[in-house]
Length: 96
Image (cartoon, rainbow, N blue to C red; front, side, top):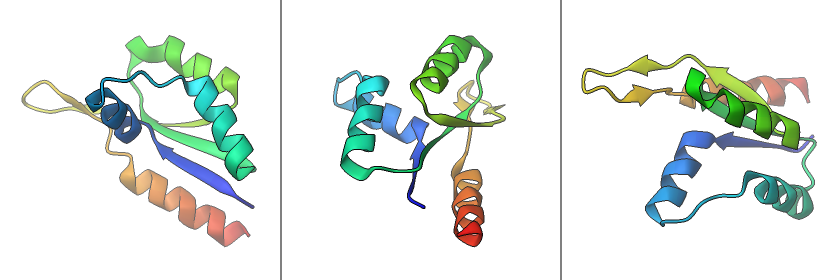
């Protein structure tokens, strides 16, 4: 089973650095047409003020996996989803 795993923050930061805005619906369509995955899992650090965005991407078809966030001393918020993403890959590989 082919699954795409997305670290949402990494994509967001990379696109932002380029000065672009990512259309998540078109990205979803592209991924489906190019790779025909069974699932597209999107890992994201949960921030309440972005609830509308989460609902929108779930409606598009992304399977959203939330990670609790923490706030650093400088005020920035960190989701640190790397371990969760890796464990999801390992679990999915174990199931195939």
